[in-house]
Length: 72
Image 1 (cartoon, rainbow, N blue to C red):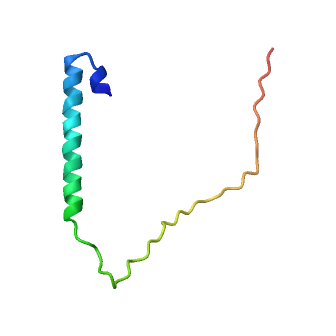
Image 2: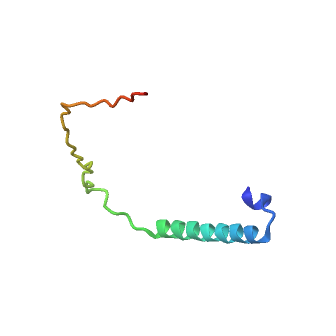
Image 3: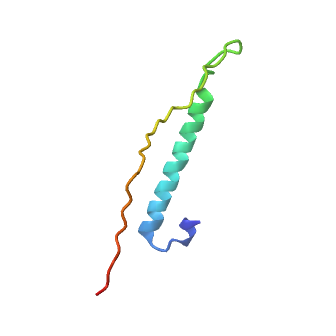
């Protein structure tokens, strides 16, 4: 763990602050998830999920060029 290997006080303080911040975020996410209501009832069918269509284009290359280096 980085916190155990840190030797400088400022680094330990920064790591401790980030650790507590992440723990708080996780706690909030868990509470939000537990309070979230179901999105549809059992007798309803969920909407179909459609993948986005990505269209590209192609260009036919008819001319090729080669650069040769001539050493004099």
